[in-house]
Length: 529
Image (tube, rainbow, N blue to C red):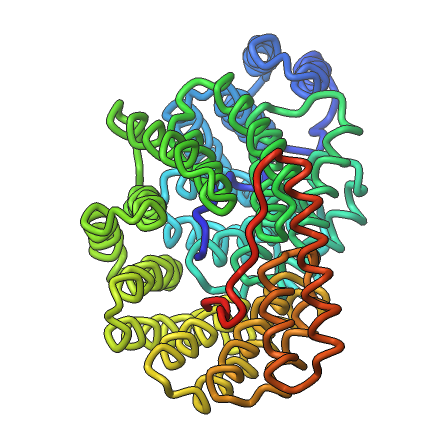
């Protein structure tokens, strides 16, 4: 399932960086910038307004720079409407000058784009950012701080629209420029890394997302003041990346920290909803179903209190609630939630289509649980078509789709076709996760079950051996019992006895640890897919 992530906060609000002469106003401006870096926004705003009052001309380039900076500190105090008016005023003053300052206009446009992005107006944000970028000159020649940050924001906007192929080179260039202009222990780099982690999650590069998530937090630790929203976003994105790489304990730690940070921020219900949704997905993946349902219901309750949810966030809650209901075998409720999720995302942007495919996949799992295998296969094939179109043929979700279709084919006894699809899924999974990983291990194990059903016992035993070798947790007694049975059917009795003994040893250890009675599987019982 493609998990819902927090709506990404735009990487930066820009303030003026060029000093316009000397005088009391400019000294006050520099004082305000120092206050802002320490998070003292109310003091910074008062100082900036004093600087504005000290200007000899309230309609020059310096005035435009000050209005950009006043808007920035107002935005940091969550006064979005006033900030929007300040940025618009800065742009208006500058464009009316005989010789406008391109940098200040670009800063104002970037900041207006930031607000548009936060209000889910991605196309409007893109339009403003491209206008800002154009003011600075040819993009292949301009390498200023402002240009680098605008490129980072444009990459974020494109990824929010699901235009991942266009976003990728922009992120790469912006990362190099921001590192060169600000260093990799700056707030600017922390924001770039947090947002790129989100992009890498969306494109299936989970290890890279973990790396960028950790880089963002390292950069934050080197900065004197970091807004709580930045800390929350970085923790959320790293927690989600760790979830995708099956590091559940670390994932819960960072997602819980993200939630704690959001709770300290006024008007952050939407972000809290998303982090609760991610925690719900974490608990569901660990089969802690009551905790998962509680997290999702908290998210739903926040939505009912007026959190300004977009359709994708609301649909993601229904999607996760549907998964929990399915795990609890409450098929009626699961169908109700999953149908709502599909209806909410059936049309829209490329990103909405990807989320629609995730909900559709869960609906297919419901059909399979109700033994409607042909219906499930049809829905999984539709999911595959969407994911291949929107994410590309090598994305991990495509591997998951192929494996799901193969499983439905096995249930329908079309094992040869299923084995071909499992092999395709395994190749993609190895590229994404490496040979020794849970997705690869599960694919080998599914192939082993299919071979066994086909009475290809040697091939089944070989696939079980590879599954156990690939698994990060090879001490699963069920798999060892199945391996032993395949070996026995292949007339490899000595190896079968050794595998069965090993499985019983694991069970004895677990029995002693839990204080429960152990029970062996029946000799002819092979595991389900």
